[in-house]
Length: 392
Ligand SMILES: [Zn+2]
Ligand SMILES: [Zn+2]
Image (cartoon, rainbow, N blue to C red; front, side):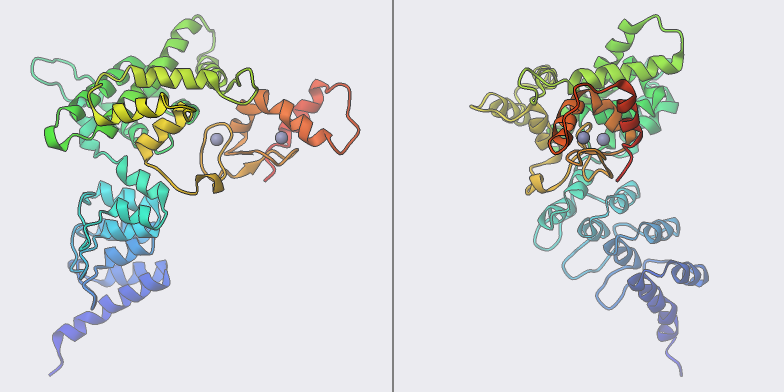
């Protein structure tokens, strides 16, 4: 008599093989034929979801979750969860999918390490930040329902999704946040309500007793502060004829103000004092996080406030200098270089354009060294240069 479990095991085995080979069409095929639960195990007690997460394969992870894969299932001998494997893969999108599906970020393996600690151990810093910055959408949607005597909620329900996205962002550089807000105009248009909700989230986070996440509370405060500042600039901008221009201008003014170099031509004094004020305005002054930031900011030869805030929110990281950053918004591993001097990098044309008023002097200096220096740069030349910016 044929062993029934062996017969069943065949398609399951081929699912593991398809994952190992990264063969998406084959994987889809077998999955479509496979009836019943997808929470089966291989000889090491690993589920298909865990394998797909370990491979960092976003599509396969999504397909398995769509089929109802249990994100917290597994019999791995060292108690690794799907999120541990996703963290090791270094694919932040995979981790985000797993977290959205209810993966527990606090679950530890047999040596007591959480998923984000494992990611840090192998140097996947973006993944560490993604996991540590994660909040479930329910935290935000809570404020989109009227509470108690309220007839109207604090947050209009249509803003829940974009606010959630805004909160989960890992790059907390103020110019990146401003550029992100440019694409989330509804948040900007409702800046007053949204910043109030962020302050309420901050308060809620600080009053959770032993579950309090001070870092997350500070992040809410920080996001509210940035949003309010942009809103203040907008209020002062009135009246402007075109709505499109108005939005554009606000981000432009905000970004250029922060990117303007100080007297030495390098340090960002305005950004620094703007961010120090943000720390100073944090209302929970007894907490450890606040003390650590103040200690760091008031030390002899203090690091820039942006560095202090970034370390607080995203954690200390090693080998930072080896990673290229966008000169405008701090995004890691930007895709483009200034085509003229090749010494600075940017995410895209928009970032380069915003930074040109700072970079033009250094750029001309760099690129004029080997050739005969020209007495004047005419505006058409700058325009031509701007058009060449997307070289990469
Ligand atoms: Zn950028
Ligand atoms: Zn340049």
